Amino acid sequence: MNIRRTKGGARVVFIEPQAPDCHIFSLYPLPRLGPVILGTMLKDAGFEPEVLFEQVEPVDPARIAAADVVGITTTTSTVPRAYAYADLARSMGKPVVMGGPHVTFAPQEALEHADCVVMGEAESVVVELFRRLACGESVEGIPGVVTPLSVSTERAPQPASLDDLPIPDLRLVRGWDIKRRVLRFSIAPVEASRGCPHDCSFCSVTGMFGRRFRFRSVGHVMEELRMHYERKRSVFFYDDNLAANTRWFTELLERIASE
Image (cartoon, rainbow, N blue to C red; front, side, top):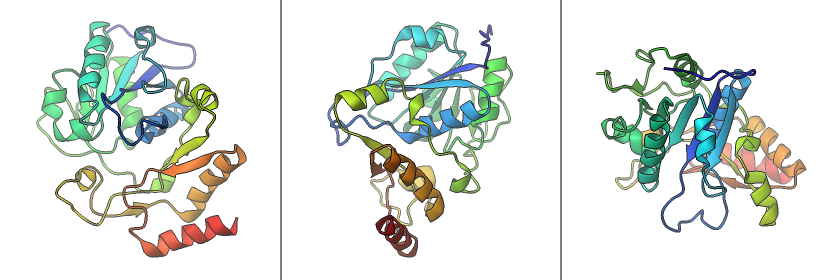
């Protein structure tokens, strides 16, 4: 595998494909935070990441061609376009890793288009995984990473604490800040918790994140909210069940109100 080197580190492109139809987020171009958090972690580790969010800006194949590794996130509605981008990247000789809810539940399907799939939450494995891919090394043995040779179906370990994750650097989303100014609105996505104590049959949240409700400390959330407030942004909480822990949620609301 021929890997193009850069002065600062391996170049990583994350792609979030556009959904084919209108949906609840169509009015405002808000990227999902998974690729942004992973990109922020890779940036802190010395990589050169960027996130191509198709709802904001068309995906330029030249940016895929310039990457050392390509990561693609998927939901079921976006997976046809995700597979098309994965096929394009692999035709250019780029190693492709896929993640997100759809491929977590259908990894063998995704492996027809990608070199490997991360099942579950990727933060605990992302740096080592992308380092190996950039160096052309085997990714066998990384927990939660499935390849055509894998027999394990274990999920990647969940982060020990959500406070260990960095505040997502939205500047990594190519064109997002420009589009935001053109549309004359300022809304930033925030994730304060993961998981849900319920297990509704129609919902993929517990299958992806578990039934244990996990949340960031109130102080950690407030640090992020202050940053957006200083930049005159409103926020949209991405949490699936923000009020699942009423004691924590009440404390968070009281802190917001007090400031």
